[in-house]
Length: 494
Ligand code: NAD
Image (cartoon, rainbow, N blue to C red):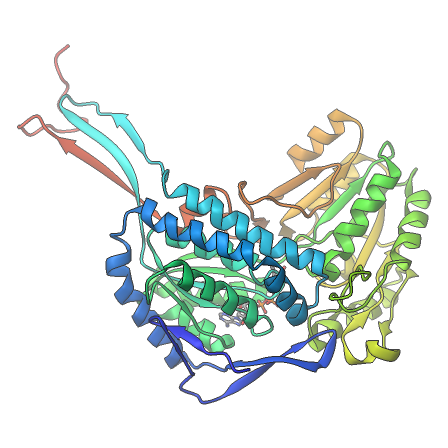
């Protein structure tokens, strides 16, 4: 089946006349569909359509815009199972997780629909008599939404739902590896009543993304992806002073103290490290364990990781799917080799899986390295695969130093039964997200999501924080005194 772009409410082919294949990473013989290999000209058409639609959409009352989002959330909920299956087929994570991804899109769309009746501003007393002062959120214009493949419906919803409720229009460019989930999401929005041109979809690669970060009629760029590409997007958007929201890489840490519940910590590290085949921005790719618990912890983690069932995510008995692509798998293989050369101890895994049906996909064993030192590349760089680096610490202070000793700052967690240690770590780990007695993954849609340092540029998505990305404040003063009143100069008589 061939899928098209959506521009100005019409489903149209790219001007390039070219298509790219979308294949199942668990079985390369499974062709899911062909999608438009779009050009910068296609993207410019979409920006023009979004710009035109903005003039009427910005005037639709926010509660009415929200009604459309409520309908969209309902439609996604009705199709959850189909969307989850499509997603597992195109990006590989197990069905239980793709159901969660779709659920997150439902939750976010409902949450932002609720904001349609809030979008709170402030009313404040004026310092002058007969003068009224308030602030309101105003929409900004056309928003470029550029997304990765690891959360193919959740991440687009984190951006598109708040953009719409605030009164903006959107040009959406999904990752080339997961265009079907993007089509599913945009079709639902269309069916729910989003007017033509308000959400446009253009599939394609870096040149489409470049147009969407440079075009003068784009006012906001909301990007989630790697730190390297985020830096380029930021540079491209700077000359035209776009508002740029970046969510980028991570190298997240779980700290396991000697008073932790061992089984709970192991369970958390297993889920945090190997969930989504380690391809989460919040994946727990580093574990720092107190030396008194180290041997027992590592024994249990290695046993559990080695027993994970790897295979096609469509098989309900499978616990870990493939890497998303040949290139991603090659990165995993390269880092495993780097870990070996750096002198870390390979405790389990370490190899590509190629026997039988594995040969048709991009499978790798769940891999645990022990005796890792904080300065090693496998403890510093984002691998985005099923590889966990375990380090020792002698104190909470040392664990926090190791935790903070990377360029990223997305998520961190601690397992401890000591409330003082938990609060100390909560205060001292410089990340955007923190967990106690839970792994580094598991964010809910109504709190801010994002990271510090090379993970983000100070914005947050999700929660009401997302509204700050997609709206601008306007402060309004209404003087009904009938005379000139000068702020800071005229002091009313008491
Ligand atoms: P990527 O950076 O390769 O691609 C992200 C998106 O940018 C894709 O749509 C891609 O086509 C597009 N793109 C590529 N070059 C571009 C350019 N020059 N200009 C504009 N757009 C361009 O990332 P990926 O491989 O799709 O995703 C994995 C990365 O995403 C990891 O680093 C992961 O940590 C990160 N991620 C971060 C978060 C977060 O919230 N912090 C969430 C999920 C994923």
